[in-house]
Image (cartoon, rainbow, N blue to C red):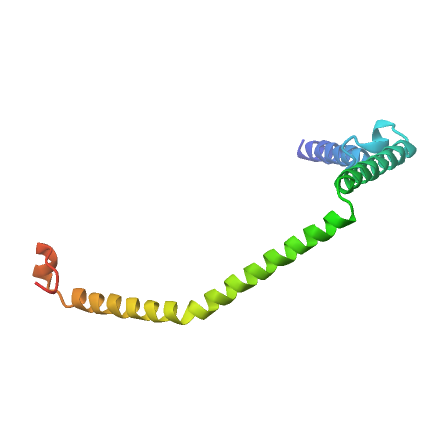
Length: 133
């Protein structure tokens, strides 16, 4: 009986494997549906044409309102803004030593405060007293 069940089980596995291999990975896309490959090529070509058309339309719209003089003015405006930004950055760099000094003073103050708090006894901690009291 065991031999018969083993043979039946092996036959079922073999049949299941064959069915799985026959189905493959296509998951019902493309040619598996019966769609010829030229249809995909046609769709790709149409999508590419549509993208090119939309790009040309956007480019035309962007360039429509500007003539050469306005473009030069816009470029000058951008250049002036860049110069202002660089001046602000330079001012910040010049003020940096003051900030550095203030930061060091603040760090020293915090360190002293930490030292005072670390010198408190358990009794002071429980009663909520600071080290200065």
